[in-house]
Image 1 (cartoon, rainbow, N blue to C red):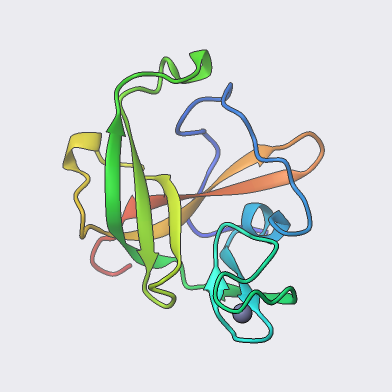
Image 2: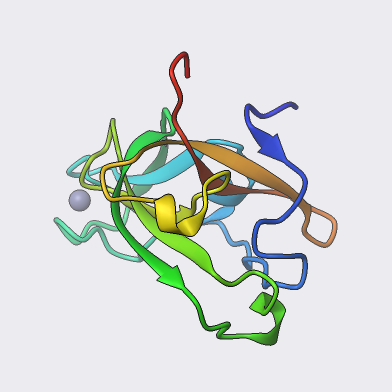
Length: 151
Ligand SMILES: [Zn+2]
């Protein structure tokens, strides 16, 4: 499988923690798409996965997929490494992206291909994926890159 925008280098370095997969997050970290949980009862989407639907407290979920296009809703530049594995990564920008097709569902990630000081609220972005060997399972970690014309 080839994923559009796939990368093999980890933005925050190879020593940073990998997600622990379970049934609720496996699609998000392995599908190569922005996978969201959707409540079967009220159709609300949410991320990260929760045990109860935040709108109706339902407990039955399906998976739906975003196009991976969005807008930076919020941002912060990290200058102090909170873990030794991140010492070489600072400064880096953490963003909250509002998805075009699910605007109330926001996804955390990093913006690649742009200096942290140039990442602005309102920046148009699309999802890209970092391919990582996650101990026998291939992970495709969502990240973001600035949207350019023809994307
Ligand atoms: Zn619900």
